[in-house]
Length: 307
Image (cartoon, rainbow, N blue to C red; front, side, top):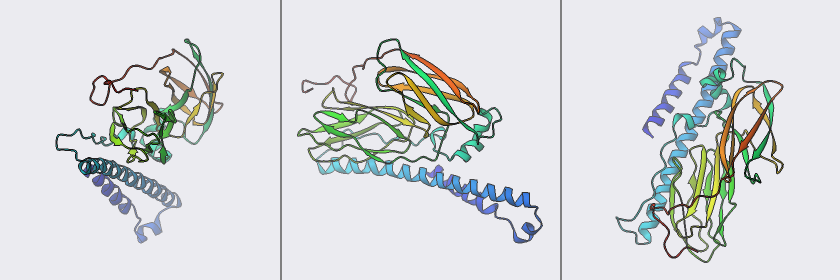
């Protein structure tokens, strides 16, 4: 947290340092003035990104505090299991504006492309094990300023609804309990692990902030058959695969792009595709994957109460 705040202050200092002196500005060429204005806009966007990241970290800390407070009020002792605090997102997972991402290295990935051109990627998904099911494709390696919202994942009839979800980085999930029994929602996904403790009938859990791109498997510590699969995407370049296996992904920046196929029922697979101004095509052939048995939040087998 301290390092992120220092980075925020450093960026602010840089922005102030770039403000042109009135005397010097008077003699600058129009091109120099335009360059300084462009640099100022970029730094302002980076400052906004840094501020948003600090807010996300504060939300994660508040989430842990709320859970601990709830446990203390319910009589939890010092030896009770506490949910781990989600680790700060790594630099590679920080959401950036398209312009900042380009200046950070996307231009190299584009092979010299300006970054302003975009095209449509079309493709086909085949499964060697039968039906495709609910599948998605997305672009990895790009960051955007897209921000997540608060989404409800209901607990009803001892199931999660929805069971499959795709959300942008920074999304907050809450879990209302519409059942007559207690639920304990948790996940052990690296970078997005959490344990919400007991949530009674009619209650809604504290929010969970998803800070790292990738799949997140969510379970109930009491009912082993409850499962939800969430894909956290790093940008807005994603789409659902149609029932016939076809997909079309528009607005993809020109350059060498990593296209990823994800589904709870298919083995994940990716391909590197050269996207030209005319577009790009890709074909995925994946294998069906059945749900694997999982352990409870303590890494143990479920007990006798497992309905």
